[in-house]
Image 1 (cartoon, rainbow, N blue to C red):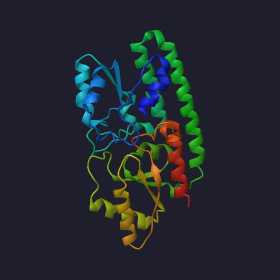
Image 2 (image 1 turned 90 degrees about the vertical axis):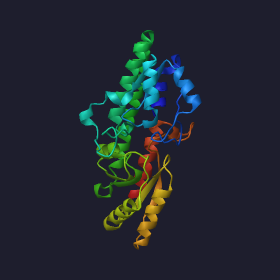
Image 3 (image 1 turned 45 degrees about the horizontal axis):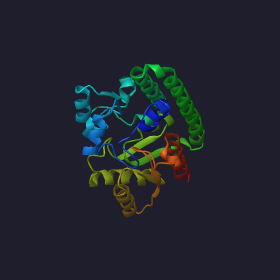
Image 4 (image 1 turned 120 degrees about the vertical axis):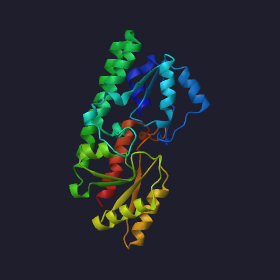
Length: 270
């Protein structure tokens, strides 16, 4: 998501390389020797922050000490507006890209960071940022209209881990993750049983897998519901911590978000 944003804002005057591609879980990502070399050769490094890339923080801090500038885009968001969690190291939910207004703020932050580095291209960066934010505003209006077709009592989103809280806050969904904010610890039997009870008692029609998290936990949840004499469908795959495959609609931020909303609304509106 950040790679796309930086490319959109930077345009042709910068060279952008993303380390984490489709299907990669940033919570668990470890830098390879090649990645460390790329980082060491960079002029500017953008990352999410809020401890999302937990295993890379030390690498980024080391780069900062050697004079390579690093920018945690999540730092621009007012901490009072972030969703807190007593179960996560940063005490904040790092999945900020699911709040489109936050992502627009991050776009401005990226533009200003690039302008500080390359002041001769400042006007280009700011203009590109405005164009990208317009795309995001159009997306927000589009998906709100689609979500409005889903009755509020059906807006219960159950996924593999708690990546969708900002989405839920923005569009009035109750969001329940089988795992917590990080995928570093696996869901246990108690988690599966607790959530299967919720599904049965509230007659929830569908649950969702995520592209960057193994299917087995959600399939175990589906089996636990079946063992209680009820059925719940797997409503589809959502993109949470990574975009889809390059050169597909889901490989863009707008396409990813549109896919997620279409999948959620179609499955829960049965």
